Amino acid sequence: MPSDSQVHDPRRRSALLGLAGAWAWPGQAVDLHPEGTVLRVASFPDLDRGVRAAVARFSQLQPQVKVRITALGVADHHTAMTTALATSANLPDLMAIDVDYIGRLSRSAGLQNLASAPFGAAASSQRLAAYALAAAQPQPGVQTALPVDIGPGALFYRHDLLQAAGLNEADLTGSWASFVAAGVQLKRRTGAYLVAHAVDLADIGIRSGLRAGEGVYFDAKGEPIVESPRFVRAFENARAARAAGIDGRMRAWSNEWTEGLRGGRVASQMMGSWLAGHLKNWIAPESAGRWRAAQLPNQAFAAWGGSYYAIPKAARQPALAWQFLQLLALDTPQQVSAFESLDAFPALLDAQASPVMEKPLPYLGGQPARLLWRTAAAQIAPTASDRYDPIASLVVQAELMKVLDLGKPVDRALADARLQLNRRVRRS
Image 1 (cartoon, rainbow, N blue to C red):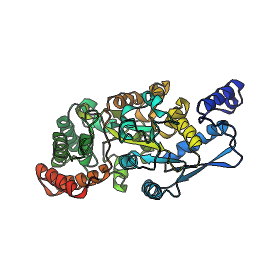
Image 2 (image 1 turned 135 degrees about the vertical axis):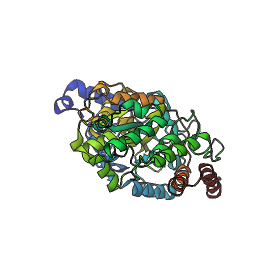
Image 3 (image 1 turned 30 degrees about the vertical axis):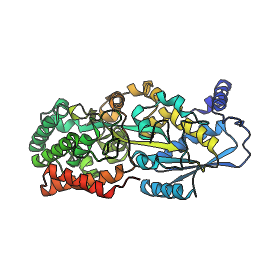
Image 4 (image 1 turned 90 degrees about the vertical axis):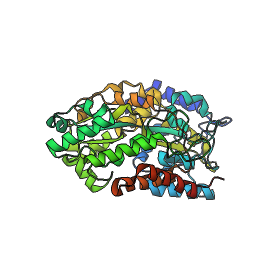
């Protein structure tokens, strides 16, 4: 955020007004909004913090406009937005969408196509992470939302525990087989589990190795592809981790999981780069200097999380919503500020080129880990989203648990997953 001296610097003020003029709605002056005009933004924690941080900057561009922010929990927010889009009632001017819901909501007829006039988002498409843009493109020429942050996958590990076990980073990242073998040695020498839960290996395997344009769970015709070699390998890796006894059977975000990471019972976690902020701020702040980051094992590159904003067709203030969205998604200082304060890895490539990427991170032992995350983000292929991805995820996870807990054969589990999806998913 700009300092007070920057705000009152005439050169700074001139630049801001020029930016506002560049964002003007065709045929509409940017400074003629009446006193009391309200821009309504619907978001969820902690994404709403980025909106609140941008309000001061937006107020310099639109001093007559009040920004009203509503933030519900992730599930409640998306339930409310789904209902609002279906009924065209109680819609905000700008709505947040988490990546887990983008496949379904991006196909809503109630959202503006930001690639078309008067928005013109297509002109900025080269400035944003291609894989994140693709997830909000239900068909060619349609862009229903813009990404504001992304989640390149990363491996976080306890450097001190690896040292105590006589291991190094290469033992974890070389291959999935070496990862599991390292987990066995770690458990024998320190008593710590290498992973909180074996499903982590499957989650990464399912998300990685996709070709550009390929869907995670469905092909271009909407047919389930859950019996593909990618799913077989992912399930087998998870099963190998469970058989080797290297997972603590702690599900992510549970109290046991948090305590496991905090107390050193779990030595690594594969998740989005944003986990670094959670570890530093509330999960394990006392472990500063003990954690490190690395690329995912077996040269895997996978997306894990991300956030978007869309403009409903029923928005009362579409011009202002578009202006605010550009501030959130396409303004480099704003993206860098959100990254530094919220650990929300920027979707904007200009922000990814910022010198802030090279800063050493004290929590990670002085490691310039953001450079790793930038490399990972550049390697993730643009994949197609599907409105039934959330259903497919639940079905696949249920079958994976039968493999891990009940010994169900992998091929039968995946075949059953395909049959369930064919029954539950009806294409219109």
